[in-house]
Length: 123
Image (tube, rainbow, N blue to C red):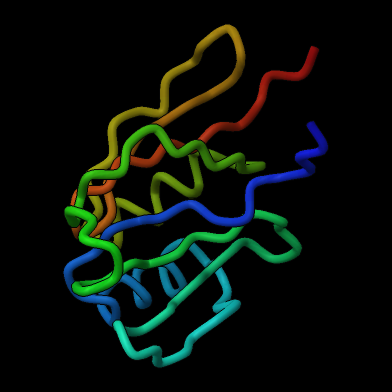
């Protein structure tokens, strides 16, 4: 096997423009692709410099169910500040909680996709 990284993670959304505002304005991700294809809009966002991007998959792009993604972990340097920003934007946030591997919180995007934030523990 010669796999080097994951290319993208699909986040099924019902409204790509609303999702784009959340992922760029609230989470601070940048647009890496925004193209109109015959089957729909190909829209991707990512943290600056990341190898793996998030595809905001709208209606007609693969038959995914909006809000069905779960367990996506985002690493941050300040989970507390990020949770405050999410709460200010109206995103449901649980935590942060102190765990053996770091300080972690969970939240959902406007479609209900489940994501987590982690500030890793220093060892």
